[in-house]
Length: 362
Image 1 (cartoon, rainbow, N blue to C red):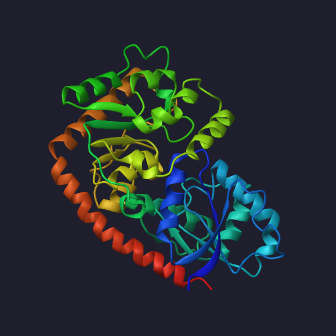
Image 2: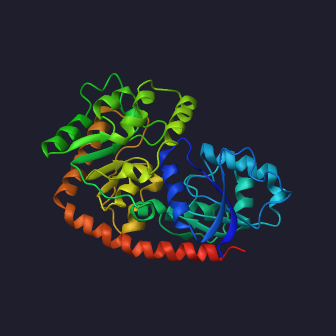
Image 3: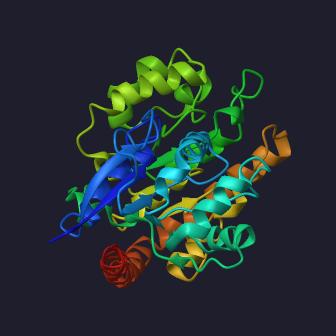
């Protein structure tokens, strides 16, 4: 009989990547753990009882430190910490990607020291956890989104599309007319490919990027009307979340293309769930993940990462993306086979790791 656990998670809230890992995590642990989910937005985690349940799981995703969601979680745990005295705590598929702020450290150290099992998604996440708590022993397992196809049963589709997930600040009124990424778009089109945009969270688009890279069909239908108004973060999160609630299968956003380039983890990784070559172009702390998962950097495209990029840097970005797309096109079958073979091995690690995690519960 499955063990019971209170699970504090991000849920379907303002970020399509978080919604995807919420769905895939539920499927992964179906039959292993009887889960009582509490989301970041819940007013309190321990609602009526004097004490928390015997097992408390935190994760997956950016729920520990340096995110808005983490601040919600930290405040709730800090306010109710005494109620967790008799609970065993666990962290699933979460970590830290930047040095925590001073005000985050006390509650973060409490959580990590109390956690009997800590599972992270990347070697860098493990490094930061050890800096906060040198006694911690994090174990690395893949993010469940790498197995979106298996966990959600999303059928694979392939069309001549390149999906891009980019920063809104790359596109301005001053540079849009002759933006260097137009060269990337022109190269893709010369190879018979259409370039479409994906918006996973606030900051992924503005009116210039939407004109240059029309949204993928799933996003166009749900989000274009609100994105076109360029809402502030509060309005975006409210409206975007309302639309996310209408989605039954978040995996469907990640199939139907041939290649992808993403600055967010979930503007990149879930495409590989369908054995489609995709390149990560985001934050430095995540750039080790292609090597963590595949033992090489075939699925990384290093590009400049600053809020204000000059013309030379934008040219460099375009050149990098064109070079990687050229590599993908000319090695597509080999890379797809490599992804499929590696995912088969990682799936075994993932399922056995999930079983061991569940067995560790009281």
